[in-house]
Length: 172
Ligand SMILES: NC(=O)c1ccc[n+]([C@@H]2O[C@H](COP(=O)([O-])OP(=O)(O)OC[C@H]3O[C@@H](n4cnc5c(N)ncnc54)[C@H](O)[C@@H]3O)[C@@H](O)[C@H]2O)c1
Image (cartoon, rainbow, N blue to C red):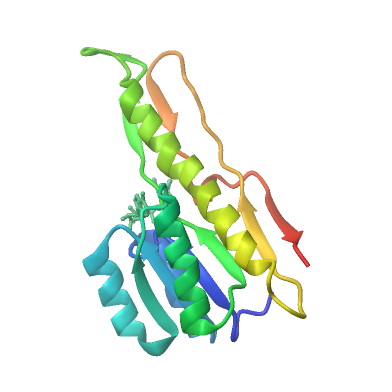
C-alpha cells in the first residue's frame, strides 16, 4: 500500500520495532499514532517527529483504550489505513524450574497482551478502516506462534518477527 498520506496506528510504538515503524512511516510521508503504555518515550518520539505523529496512551488489552486510539487517528488525521501490532512482552521461564512449575499467571499475561491485545486492536481498527470511502483499506493480520517445550524453557514469544503469515484482507 502507499504509505504517503496514509495513517497508521502502531501499537508498541514507543520502543523497538514499533518506534522504528513509526519513524519509517513518517519518513515515507505517512501519519502515525504511537499507541503504547510507555508515555514518556511515546511522547518524546511523537514530539521529535512533529505534526505527522501523535502519542496516545494505550494498553492494548483494554477496549476503551483501543477505541480512544482509533478515535484519535480519525480526529487527528481524518481516516485510518493500517494497524501495525508491535506491542508485546516476552518472558523466559522453565516449564519446571527450581521453584516449581511455570507460573500460569505470567503465561496468561503474555497471551493477554500479545494475542488478545492484538486482536482487540485489529477488530477496532478494522471497523474504522471499513468506513473508508474509495480505495480499499488493508489490514495486516499478523499470526504469531507459541512454542511449547515440555522440558527447559517455555518459549512464549508472540511477536511480530514470528510472522507465519501476512495476509491482506480487503475490507472494501
Ligand atoms: N526485537 C526483537 O528482535 C524481538 C525478537 C523476538 C521477539 N520480540 C518481541 O516483539 C515485541 C516487540 O519487540 P521490541 O523489541 O520492539 O520490544 P520493546 O520492549 O522495545 O517494545 C515493546 C513495546 O510494547 C509496549 N507494550 C507492552 N505492553 C503493552 C500493552 N499492554 N499495551 C501497549 N503497549 C505495550 C512497551 O511499552 C514497549 O514500548 C515484543 O513482544 C518482543 O518480545 C522482539
